Length: 63
Picture 1: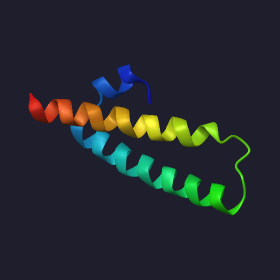
Picture 2: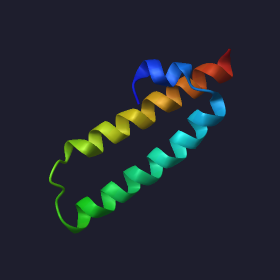
Picture 3: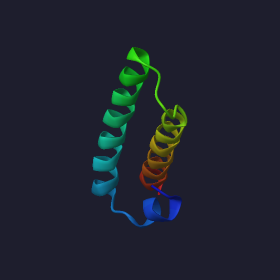
């Protein structure tokens, strides 16, 4: 997700997306451990997406 999409999304939708992203990241890690991914940059992109969502959720809690 892009930052603009994250800021517009509701908190519940972000929490759902965070759970989905974490599962996808875990699946990518497992697939990469078994045999190398064709595009290992996917791991980095997924990890950064998770961080963006977590940052937005934390920001909303503080406000």
